[in-house]
Length: 199
Image 1 (tube, rainbow, N blue to C red):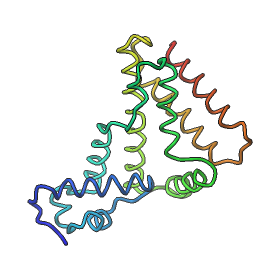
Image 2 (cartoon, helix red, strand yellow; image 1 turned 180 degrees about the horizontal axis):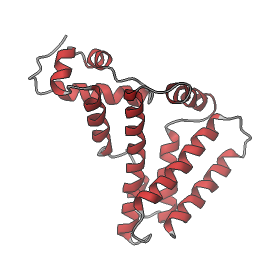
Image 3 (spheres, helix red, strand yellow; image 1 turned 180 degrees about the vertical axis):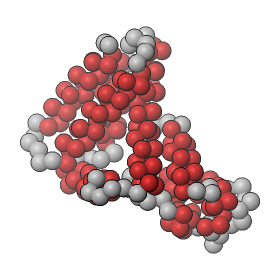
């Protein structure tokens, strides 16, 4: 069943459908037809609100910027600042899981973005999602700066550094492992947190 383009909930349904598709599969191609089918609206309705695929992707990711993570560890001020930052970074790692699940997700990312040149739309989706991850880290760092737990400045550079660490750990989760990987991962996150908090 489709709704009229002027229906007040049509735009929201489109955005929810697209965001759900990305959360289920970060390599999902947000084609107009696929998103319209998922939202149960016509392609004309979708085009009414989002004339281009890029406009849809940018709007979805911009909306994700402002979503609060459930049980955000940064909010628990009874925990030391460095431990909160490590817990927040762990949230980003938890999106991939470990072992076979991580191998499937990293494999899908490889196929979508590395194995062959990504399309312009695929590249735009990836870059938008990457910005989302960095934006979350920047928000966490800004909380710590506001609390006086770390010096001000270089938020973007620190967030990029932490994002690179998290990406490396995500890749490691897909590789064969010994039982000590979780301990090593935690130590890596602690060292990274200490590095950005004492710059």
